[in-house]
Length: 374
Image 1 (cartoon, rainbow, N blue to C red):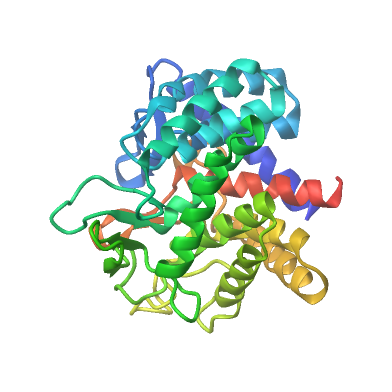
Image 2 (cartoon, one colour):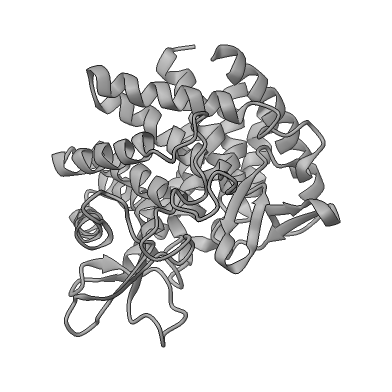
Protein backbone atom coordinates (compact mmCIF):
# COMPACT_ATOMS: atom_id res chain seq x y z
CA UNK A 1 0.00 0.00 0.00
CA UNK A 2 2.92 2.36 0.51
CA UNK A 3 3.85 1.80 -3.12
CA UNK A 4 0.23 2.37 -4.18
CA UNK A 5 0.13 5.67 -2.32
CA UNK A 6 3.51 6.89 -3.56
CA UNK A 7 2.78 5.96 -7.17
CA UNK A 8 -0.69 7.46 -7.06
CA UNK A 9 0.48 10.74 -5.55
CA UNK A 10 3.19 10.98 -8.20
CA UNK A 11 0.45 10.98 -10.80
CA UNK A 12 -1.89 13.19 -8.74
CA UNK A 13 0.85 15.80 -8.50
CA UNK A 14 1.56 15.83 -12.21
CA UNK A 15 -2.10 15.85 -13.23
CA UNK A 16 -3.28 18.45 -10.72
CA UNK A 17 -0.47 20.88 -11.51
CA UNK A 18 -1.05 20.43 -15.24
CA UNK A 19 -4.77 21.08 -14.73
CA UNK A 20 -3.99 24.23 -12.74
CA UNK A 21 -1.68 25.45 -15.49
CA UNK A 22 -4.33 24.76 -18.13
CA UNK A 23 -6.93 26.74 -16.17
CA UNK A 24 -4.62 29.54 -15.06
CA UNK A 25 -5.77 32.05 -17.67
CA UNK A 26 -9.39 30.83 -17.73
CA UNK A 27 -10.83 33.19 -15.18
CA UNK A 28 -13.15 31.60 -12.65
CA UNK A 29 -13.23 28.21 -14.35
CA UNK A 30 -12.92 24.89 -12.54
CA UNK A 31 -12.65 21.33 -13.88
CA UNK A 32 -15.73 19.15 -14.21
CA UNK A 33 -15.02 16.31 -16.67
CA UNK A 34 -13.36 15.39 -19.95
CA UNK A 35 -14.70 14.27 -23.32
CA UNK A 36 -12.09 11.98 -24.84
CA UNK A 37 -13.64 11.90 -28.31
CA UNK A 38 -13.31 15.68 -28.59
CA UNK A 39 -10.18 15.97 -26.41
CA UNK A 40 -12.18 18.57 -24.51
CA UNK A 41 -11.80 19.49 -20.84
CA UNK A 42 -15.25 20.37 -19.54
CA UNK A 43 -15.18 23.19 -16.99
CA UNK A 44 -17.71 25.02 -14.86
CA UNK A 45 -18.08 28.22 -12.91
CA UNK A 46 -18.31 28.19 -9.13
CA UNK A 47 -22.08 27.62 -9.12
CA UNK A 48 -21.73 24.06 -10.39
CA UNK A 49 -22.00 21.65 -7.46
CA UNK A 50 -18.54 20.19 -8.14
CA UNK A 51 -16.62 23.46 -7.99
CA UNK A 52 -14.96 22.82 -4.62
CA UNK A 53 -13.44 19.46 -5.47
CA UNK A 54 -10.41 20.58 -7.50
CA UNK A 55 -9.32 23.11 -4.85
CA UNK A 56 -9.74 20.25 -2.39
CA UNK A 57 -7.47 17.98 -4.43
CA UNK A 58 -4.85 20.74 -4.40
CA UNK A 59 -5.14 21.09 -0.63
CA UNK A 60 -4.72 17.34 -0.21
CA UNK A 61 -1.72 17.45 -2.52
CA UNK A 62 -0.22 20.21 -0.36
CA UNK A 63 -0.93 18.13 2.75
CA UNK A 64 0.98 15.23 1.20
CA UNK A 65 3.89 17.20 -0.21
CA UNK A 66 4.27 20.27 2.00
CA UNK A 67 5.28 22.09 -1.16
CA UNK A 68 4.47 25.83 -0.99
CA UNK A 69 3.79 25.77 -4.74
CA UNK A 70 0.93 23.37 -4.11
CA UNK A 71 -0.37 25.59 -1.31
CA UNK A 72 -0.37 28.62 -3.59
CA UNK A 73 -2.34 26.73 -6.23
CA UNK A 74 -4.83 25.56 -3.61
CA UNK A 75 -5.30 29.11 -2.37
CA UNK A 76 -5.72 30.49 -5.89
CA UNK A 77 -8.35 27.95 -6.90
CA UNK A 78 -10.19 28.14 -3.58
CA UNK A 79 -10.55 31.87 -4.23
CA UNK A 80 -12.50 31.02 -7.39
CA UNK A 81 -15.14 29.34 -5.22
CA UNK A 82 -15.36 31.81 -2.33
CA UNK A 83 -18.48 33.64 -3.49
CA UNK A 84 -20.44 30.40 -3.04
CA UNK A 85 -20.35 31.06 0.71
CA UNK A 86 -23.52 33.04 -0.01
CA UNK A 87 -25.15 30.15 -1.88
CA UNK A 88 -28.76 29.67 -0.78
CA UNK A 89 -30.04 28.44 -4.16
CA UNK A 90 -29.18 24.76 -3.60
CA UNK A 91 -27.80 22.40 -0.96
CA UNK A 92 -24.34 21.89 -2.44
CA UNK A 93 -22.60 24.60 -0.47
CA UNK A 94 -20.96 21.91 1.63
CA UNK A 95 -19.30 20.34 -1.39
CA UNK A 96 -18.33 23.77 -2.69
CA UNK A 97 -17.00 25.40 0.47
CA UNK A 98 -16.08 22.64 2.93
CA UNK A 99 -14.00 20.63 0.43
CA UNK A 100 -12.07 23.78 -0.45
CA UNK A 101 -12.01 26.20 2.47
CA UNK A 102 -12.59 23.50 5.06
CA UNK A 103 -9.41 21.74 4.06
CA UNK A 104 -7.65 25.06 3.64
CA UNK A 105 -8.52 26.14 7.16
CA UNK A 106 -7.57 22.77 8.61
CA UNK A 107 -4.13 22.95 7.01
CA UNK A 108 -3.33 26.66 7.40
CA UNK A 109 -5.49 28.09 10.19
CA UNK A 110 -6.15 31.19 8.09
CA UNK A 111 -8.73 33.31 9.91
CA UNK A 112 -10.26 34.55 6.67
CA UNK A 113 -10.96 30.92 5.75
CA UNK A 114 -12.65 30.45 9.10
CA UNK A 115 -14.85 33.43 8.30
CA UNK A 116 -15.79 31.93 4.93
CA UNK A 117 -16.87 28.69 6.64
CA UNK A 118 -19.02 30.60 9.12
CA UNK A 119 -20.81 32.57 6.42
CA UNK A 120 -21.33 29.36 4.45
CA UNK A 121 -22.87 27.66 7.47
CA UNK A 122 -25.38 30.46 7.90
CA UNK A 123 -26.24 30.21 4.22
CA UNK A 124 -26.68 26.44 4.40
CA UNK A 125 -29.25 26.41 7.19
CA UNK A 126 -31.48 28.86 5.31
CA UNK A 127 -32.66 25.88 3.25
CA UNK A 128 -33.85 24.00 6.34
CA UNK A 129 -37.61 23.64 6.84
CA UNK A 130 -38.29 23.12 10.58
CA UNK A 131 -41.78 21.77 9.94
CA UNK A 132 -40.46 19.05 7.63
CA UNK A 133 -37.17 18.62 9.47
CA UNK A 134 -34.98 18.46 6.37
CA UNK A 135 -32.82 20.66 4.15
CA UNK A 136 -34.25 21.17 0.69
CA UNK A 137 -32.03 19.93 -2.14
CA UNK A 138 -33.38 21.15 -5.48
CA UNK A 139 -35.59 24.03 -6.55
CA UNK A 140 -36.36 22.79 -10.06
CA UNK A 141 -39.08 20.49 -11.44
CA UNK A 142 -41.77 21.81 -9.11
CA UNK A 143 -44.45 19.94 -11.03
CA UNK A 144 -42.87 16.64 -10.00
CA UNK A 145 -41.47 17.36 -6.54
CA UNK A 146 -42.92 19.54 -3.79
CA UNK A 147 -39.91 19.48 -1.46
CA UNK A 148 -37.16 17.24 -2.83
CA UNK A 149 -34.35 15.90 -0.68
CA UNK A 150 -31.60 13.79 -2.25
CA UNK A 151 -29.32 11.32 -0.51
CA UNK A 152 -26.31 13.38 -1.62
CA UNK A 153 -27.40 16.03 0.87
CA UNK A 154 -25.94 13.92 3.70
CA UNK A 155 -22.55 15.05 2.40
CA UNK A 156 -23.25 18.70 3.22
CA UNK A 157 -23.85 18.19 6.93
CA UNK A 158 -20.15 18.22 7.80
CA UNK A 159 -20.14 21.96 7.15
CA UNK A 160 -22.96 22.37 9.68
CA UNK A 161 -21.18 20.29 12.28
CA UNK A 162 -18.00 22.30 11.77
CA UNK A 163 -20.02 25.43 12.49
CA UNK A 164 -21.55 23.87 15.59
CA UNK A 165 -18.13 22.96 16.98
CA UNK A 166 -16.58 26.31 16.05
CA UNK A 167 -19.39 28.66 17.05
CA UNK A 168 -21.17 26.75 19.80
CA UNK A 169 -24.51 27.51 18.12
CA UNK A 170 -26.73 24.50 18.80
CA UNK A 171 -28.89 25.24 15.76
CA UNK A 172 -26.28 23.79 13.42
CA UNK A 173 -26.24 20.49 15.29
CA UNK A 174 -30.01 20.38 15.58
CA UNK A 175 -30.44 20.87 11.84
CA UNK A 176 -27.83 18.23 10.96
CA UNK A 177 -29.33 15.69 13.37
CA UNK A 178 -32.88 16.35 12.22
CA UNK A 179 -31.91 15.97 8.58
CA UNK A 180 -29.99 12.77 9.28
CA UNK A 181 -32.85 11.25 11.24
CA UNK A 182 -35.49 12.10 8.65
CA UNK A 183 -33.26 10.69 5.92
CA UNK A 184 -32.85 7.45 7.85
CA UNK A 185 -36.61 7.26 8.27
CA UNK A 186 -37.70 8.00 4.71
CA UNK A 187 -34.83 7.34 2.29
CA UNK A 188 -33.88 3.85 3.42
CA UNK A 189 -35.53 0.55 2.65
CA UNK A 190 -35.45 -2.40 5.10
CA UNK A 191 -32.27 -3.77 3.47
CA UNK A 192 -30.54 -0.37 3.92
CA UNK A 193 -30.51 0.46 0.24
CA UNK A 194 -31.74 3.99 -0.37
CA UNK A 195 -33.80 6.04 -2.74
CA UNK A 196 -32.04 8.91 -4.45
CA UNK A 197 -34.86 11.46 -4.18
CA UNK A 198 -37.59 11.74 -1.58
CA UNK A 199 -40.10 14.55 -2.06
CA UNK A 200 -42.05 15.64 0.99
CA UNK A 201 -45.64 16.87 0.91
CA UNK A 202 -45.34 20.38 2.29
CA UNK A 203 -48.70 20.21 4.06
CA UNK A 204 -48.53 16.78 5.69
CA UNK A 205 -44.75 16.41 5.99
CA UNK A 206 -45.07 12.87 4.61
CA UNK A 207 -43.18 11.81 1.47
CA UNK A 208 -45.42 11.84 -1.60
CA UNK A 209 -42.81 10.53 -4.04
CA UNK A 210 -39.72 8.34 -3.80
CA UNK A 211 -37.42 7.87 -6.79
CA UNK A 212 -33.90 6.89 -7.79
CA UNK A 213 -33.41 9.63 -10.35
CA UNK A 214 -29.87 8.69 -11.36
CA UNK A 215 -30.16 4.93 -10.85
CA UNK A 216 -31.33 2.12 -13.10
CA UNK A 217 -34.90 2.29 -11.76
CA UNK A 218 -36.66 3.64 -8.68
CA UNK A 219 -36.23 0.50 -6.54
CA UNK A 220 -32.65 -0.11 -7.68
CA UNK A 221 -29.38 0.18 -5.75
CA UNK A 222 -27.54 3.17 -7.21
CA UNK A 223 -23.91 2.79 -6.18
CA UNK A 224 -22.90 6.40 -5.74
CA UNK A 225 -26.05 7.19 -3.79
CA UNK A 226 -25.25 4.35 -1.40
CA UNK A 227 -21.70 5.68 -1.08
CA UNK A 228 -22.96 9.20 -0.30
CA UNK A 229 -25.16 7.80 2.46
CA UNK A 230 -22.38 5.64 3.87
CA UNK A 231 -19.96 8.54 3.99
CA UNK A 232 -22.57 10.89 5.45
CA UNK A 233 -23.49 8.64 8.35
CA UNK A 234 -19.84 7.95 9.14
CA UNK A 235 -19.37 11.72 9.40
CA UNK A 236 -22.47 12.15 11.54
CA UNK A 237 -21.34 9.45 13.96
CA UNK A 238 -17.87 10.99 14.18
CA UNK A 239 -19.38 14.42 14.89
CA UNK A 240 -22.20 13.42 17.30
CA UNK A 241 -21.27 9.96 18.68
CA UNK A 242 -24.93 9.00 18.35
CA UNK A 243 -24.97 5.21 18.11
CA UNK A 244 -27.80 5.11 15.56
CA UNK A 245 -25.55 6.75 12.98
CA UNK A 246 -22.81 4.19 13.46
CA UNK A 247 -25.39 1.42 13.17
CA UNK A 248 -26.66 2.97 9.95
CA UNK A 249 -23.18 3.31 8.48
CA UNK A 250 -22.33 -0.30 9.35
CA UNK A 251 -25.55 -1.56 7.76
CA UNK A 252 -24.95 0.39 4.55
CA UNK A 253 -21.31 -0.72 4.38
CA UNK A 254 -22.27 -4.36 4.83
CA UNK A 255 -24.91 -4.14 2.12
CA UNK A 256 -22.44 -2.64 -0.35
CA UNK A 257 -19.56 -4.99 0.45
CA UNK A 258 -21.54 -8.22 0.75
CA UNK A 259 -23.94 -7.69 -2.13
CA UNK A 260 -23.72 -10.57 -4.62
CA UNK A 261 -23.26 -8.07 -7.45
CA UNK A 262 -20.20 -6.40 -5.93
CA UNK A 263 -17.33 -7.19 -8.33
CA UNK A 264 -14.32 -9.00 -6.97
CA UNK A 265 -12.00 -6.01 -7.40
CA UNK A 266 -14.16 -3.77 -5.20
CA UNK A 267 -15.23 -1.19 -7.78
CA UNK A 268 -19.03 -1.31 -7.96
CA UNK A 269 -21.19 -1.32 -11.03
CA UNK A 270 -22.81 2.10 -11.43
CA UNK A 271 -25.97 0.43 -10.14
CA UNK A 272 -25.88 -2.88 -8.28
CA UNK A 273 -29.09 -3.87 -10.08
CA UNK A 274 -28.21 -2.55 -13.55
CA UNK A 275 -29.95 -4.78 -16.11
CA UNK A 276 -26.80 -5.48 -18.15
CA UNK A 277 -24.56 -6.84 -15.37
CA UNK A 278 -21.87 -8.18 -15.83
CA UNK A 279 -21.42 -5.86 -18.81
CA UNK A 280 -22.62 -2.76 -16.92
CA UNK A 281 -20.20 0.12 -16.43
CA UNK A 282 -18.24 0.42 -13.22
CA UNK A 283 -18.21 3.72 -11.34
CA UNK A 284 -14.76 4.70 -10.11
CA UNK A 285 -16.21 7.69 -8.27
CA UNK A 286 -18.49 5.45 -6.20
CA UNK A 287 -15.52 3.21 -5.40
CA UNK A 288 -13.42 6.19 -4.30
CA UNK A 289 -16.13 7.65 -2.05
CA UNK A 290 -16.76 4.24 -0.56
CA UNK A 291 -13.06 3.61 0.09
CA UNK A 292 -12.62 6.92 1.89
CA UNK A 293 -15.67 6.28 4.07
CA UNK A 294 -14.60 2.70 4.85
CA UNK A 295 -11.15 3.78 6.01
CA UNK A 296 -12.72 6.09 8.56
CA UNK A 297 -15.36 3.52 9.48
CA UNK A 298 -12.59 1.02 10.21
CA UNK A 299 -11.35 3.40 12.93
CA UNK A 300 -14.81 3.63 14.50
CA UNK A 301 -15.39 -0.13 14.67
CA UNK A 302 -13.45 -3.00 16.18
CA UNK A 303 -12.31 -6.54 15.47
CA UNK A 304 -13.60 -8.34 12.40
CA UNK A 305 -15.76 -5.42 11.29
CA UNK A 306 -12.85 -3.00 11.36
CA UNK A 307 -10.65 -5.44 9.45
CA UNK A 308 -13.41 -6.05 6.91
CA UNK A 309 -13.79 -2.36 6.12
CA UNK A 310 -10.09 -1.62 5.90
CA UNK A 311 -9.50 -4.70 3.75
CA UNK A 312 -12.16 -3.60 1.25
CA UNK A 313 -10.73 -0.07 1.13
CA UNK A 314 -7.26 -1.50 0.46
CA UNK A 315 -8.68 -3.56 -2.37
CA UNK A 316 -10.48 -0.56 -3.84
CA UNK A 317 -7.47 1.74 -3.68
CA UNK A 318 -5.25 -0.96 -5.17
CA UNK A 319 -7.68 -1.44 -8.05
CA UNK A 320 -8.09 2.31 -8.62
CA UNK A 321 -4.32 2.67 -8.83
CA UNK A 322 -4.09 0.25 -11.79
CA UNK A 323 -3.87 1.49 -15.39
CA UNK A 324 -7.52 0.57 -15.93
CA UNK A 325 -8.57 3.42 -13.65
CA UNK A 326 -5.55 5.64 -12.95
CA UNK A 327 -4.58 7.96 -15.79
CA UNK A 328 -1.16 8.19 -17.36
CA UNK A 329 0.35 11.64 -16.75
CA UNK A 330 -0.63 14.10 -19.46
CA UNK A 331 -3.70 12.12 -20.54
CA UNK A 332 -7.35 12.01 -19.45
CA UNK A 333 -7.73 15.78 -19.66
CA UNK A 334 -5.43 16.06 -16.61
CA UNK A 335 -7.96 14.26 -14.42
CA UNK A 336 -6.67 11.54 -12.11
CA UNK A 337 -9.17 8.70 -12.41
CA UNK A 338 -10.90 7.29 -15.47
CA UNK A 339 -14.21 5.43 -15.69
CA UNK A 340 -16.58 7.55 -13.65
CA UNK A 341 -20.33 7.44 -14.22
CA UNK A 342 -22.40 10.57 -13.73
CA UNK A 343 -26.00 10.20 -14.90
CA UNK A 344 -26.72 7.25 -17.19
CA UNK A 345 -30.51 7.79 -17.45
CA UNK A 346 -29.83 11.24 -18.95
CA UNK A 347 -26.77 10.01 -20.87
CA UNK A 348 -24.69 12.63 -19.08
CA UNK A 349 -21.03 12.11 -18.10
CA UNK A 350 -20.93 8.40 -18.80
CA UNK A 351 -17.61 6.51 -18.53
CA UNK A 352 -15.58 9.68 -18.06
CA UNK A 353 -13.32 11.21 -15.40
CA UNK A 354 -15.21 13.12 -12.71
CA UNK A 355 -13.71 15.73 -10.43
CA UNK A 356 -15.38 14.28 -7.32
CA UNK A 357 -13.90 10.87 -8.07
CA UNK A 358 -10.47 12.48 -8.03
CA UNK A 359 -11.19 14.24 -4.74
CA UNK A 360 -12.32 11.20 -2.78
CA UNK A 361 -9.57 8.99 -4.24
CA UNK A 362 -6.97 11.52 -3.07
CA UNK A 363 -8.67 11.81 0.30
CA UNK A 364 -8.80 8.04 0.74
CA UNK A 365 -5.08 7.68 0.00
CA UNK A 366 -4.26 10.33 2.59
CA UNK A 367 -6.57 8.76 5.15
CA UNK A 368 -4.91 5.40 4.69
CA UNK A 369 -1.45 6.93 4.97
CA UNK A 370 -2.43 8.74 8.19
CA UNK A 371 -3.99 5.59 9.62
CA UNK A 372 -0.72 3.71 9.14
CA UNK A 373 1.39 6.59 10.40
CA UNK A 374 3.53 6.69 7.29
